[in-house]
Image 1: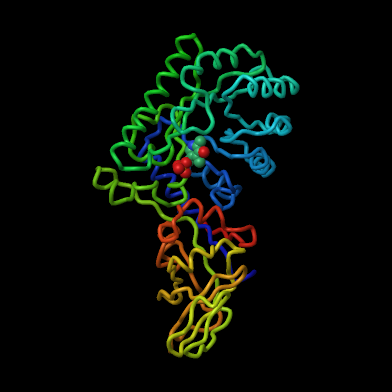
Image 2 (image 1 turned 180 degrees about the vertical axis):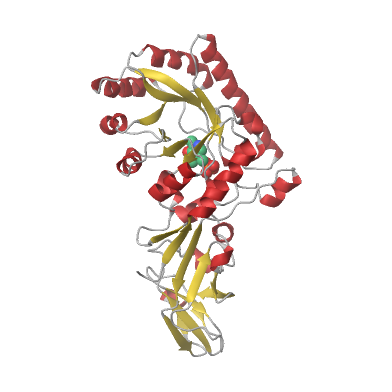
Length: 383
Ligand SMILES: *Cc1c(COP(=O)(O)O)cnc(C)c1O
C-alpha cells in the first residue's frame, strides 16, 4: 500500500453516534447522512458502523450512492437528500430510496416511475423551503402538494422536512432566523394535518440543531458533521459546555503519509514550483508523497499548515505539487525516510491538529477537507 492513506476510526464514529443518542434520547429516529462517500470516509463501512451504533435511517445525495449501499447488503431505509433525473427514477424505486419531492412535475415523474414498478404507496418526503433557498416548496404550498402526493395513487407521504441555513451560528440574528425557519416549518406541518393528511416523519435538525435545539427534534434528527467528529460551525465543545451541553466528539479520520526522502538544502536555494520559498539558512527538507491530487490543497501551503512528524510540527514549504509536497525539518531533526507524517486527525495517531483547524487556516470548512480527499488515498478501516 502506498505511504499516503486515511485511517478511518470506526470506533470513533460509533462513539460519536452513541454520544448523539445520549443527547437526543430514544424518541427521535436517527438519520445518518453518508452522502459524498460518508463525507469522504467511505460510505459502506461507515453505513455499517452507523447502523451498528443505532442509526435508523441513512441518507445519500445521488441514486448511485444509494445503489452502492444496496449492492453491499445495506437494507436500512435510505433518504435521497438531492434531486435526481427522470432517467434515474427507475433505479431510485428499484433500490427503495426515498426521495425528497416538492413540485407537481417531479411528484408526477416519481409517481409514474413508482407505478411502473407496481408501487401503490411508495413513500416520498415533502421538502419545505423555509429559508435555505435550495430545494423545497414554499410553506404555503405544502398542504396542496401533500394532497397531490396522497391522491397520486402511487405515492404516500412518508415525511415532511426542511433544512436550516444558519443553525450552526451563535450570532443572535442567525438564531432568530433559525427560529423563523422552524415556525414556518411547523406551520406547514399544521396545514398538512388540517387537510386530514398524516405528515409522516417530520424532521429538520442537522448537527447544530441536534446539539442545541431539542424542541426541533420532532420525529427524526439528521446530524452529519458531528458524526464524523467535527464541530457544527460555531458550536465548539467549549461553547456547548457553556450552555450546559456536555458532548465529546472524536475525529474519525486521520490523514497520514511517510517521509519519502530527506534532502539538504543550501541557503539561498528555492523549493518547489514558482520558487515561492527560499531557504534563508542551510536546512533540510522532507519530501512527502502526497499532494493536491490526494486532496492536500495548494492553499494549505499559503495557509501555513504544518505536518506532524514524530510528535513535532514542521511547516510546509513552497507550493504543494500534484503528488508531492515538502516540509522544512531544519538541521538535526533526526527525521528519516519512512517516518510517519500526519496532516490531521485523531490524537492517538500523532496528529497535532484536526481537519477543522486546517479548514480554518485555509478559509474553508472541515466538510470540504475530508470530502475532497481523492479516491487515490486508500481508506484503512480500524475498529
Ligand atoms: C448534509 C445534510 C444534513 C447534515 O448536515 P450537517 O451540517 O453535516 O449536520 C442534514 N440534512 C440535509 C438535507 C443535508 O443535506
